[in-house]
Length: 82
Image (cartoon, rainbow, N blue to C red; front, side, top):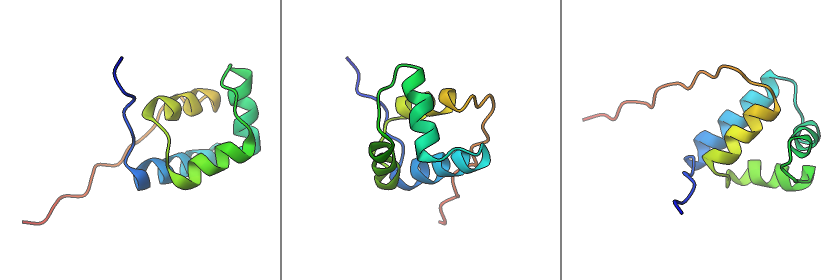
């Protein structure tokens, strides 16, 4: 079975926090929404995952679904200087 794609530490952490803020979700509210859709997680565990940035792209998508996010703008990566 393939391993879940990991989001870059800073990018995933910042992006999820921004989406939560934009949609008015606290860790408690997101944990409750995730539990309702069958993803068992406590608010404290969710907070730790977000703070560490140690979650998979699959989990990130589950969070988006729980918050009922329909569209998401992902800014392009900064260009590397030559």
